[in-house]
Amino acid sequence: MQYTFIYQSPLGKILLAADDQGLTGLWFEGQKYFAQNLDQNHMEKETPVLFQTRQWLDLYFSGKNPDFLPPLHMIGTDFQKAVWKILLSVPYGEVTTYGKIAQKIAADRGIGHMSAQAVGSAVGHNHISIIIPCHRVVGTDGSLTGYAGGIEKKRMLLKLEGLEEKKADF
Image 1 (cartoon, rainbow, N blue to C red):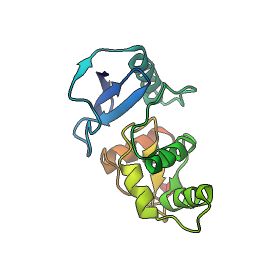
Image 2: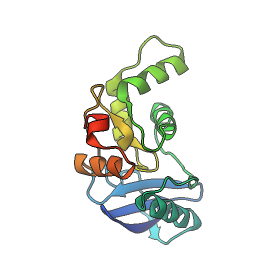
Image 3: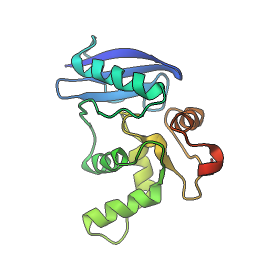
């Protein structure tokens, strides 16, 4: 069973979803792939996981780097999960590129090359945005590229983390 809770953020409503294992979704209202993996039979109820997620978001939106993660239950392919785990290692206030993630995946798998476009697709299908920080991925030239929640939200999240446009070329 999945449970949901609506979180009121400074950037708009966010739908949170969790099951007994952990957080399964965090989507800005109306974003691309909104509630994609949400069970049709879900219940609106703030569970302990959703309460921890709300605490994490409260800290984050107050401009602090939360020092904990709520339990996560990533639902996706093995490739997507590998990309999302790399995203979790991108530090607060820093960015990486799709190409660097592709290089890391290729090295981890012992292959010569991995497509940055395939990485981009996995990043774009991240169901637990903000906490799994897909907003910290930029183009090779430092430009802001797609974000399921919208480029303006991506820009605002990066600014919240202390990245100014002149520092990251966005």
